[in-house]
Image (cartoon, rainbow, N blue to C red):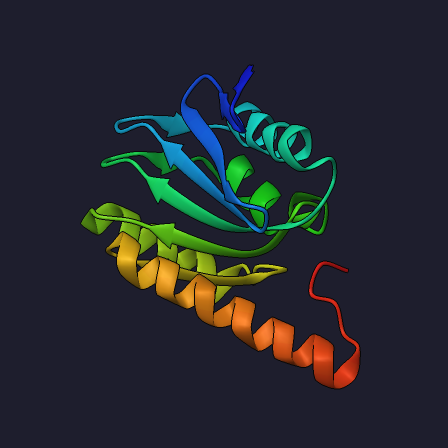
Length: 145
């Protein structure tokens, strides 16, 4: 992994801290996302934030598909160690089918939604940030815990 200006490049992804609360995870097209790749992404999140939790904006490259182990790791408590929410950008029919299975049969441990474009995904994340800040003010609640 190379760390440069709050960006880390892994075998199949580039992870960038776009603000102190949000990671952009750009996964290359045509990849088979395996457990080792997911672990590299978690390691990158830790390296960038020192253990803080992020809102993740994950741009999944065209025809890239996670294997079963990577999907299970992503929804696990351990897999949520450095994230508050996941916004996935997907583009292919196969990715949409997997996304529906992911949400309906394996409940993620953090708030998770799938989008077909970056603007919608970012708007959802920004809405979560506002709602979370209001909840912190009102109830002294912290989404990063």
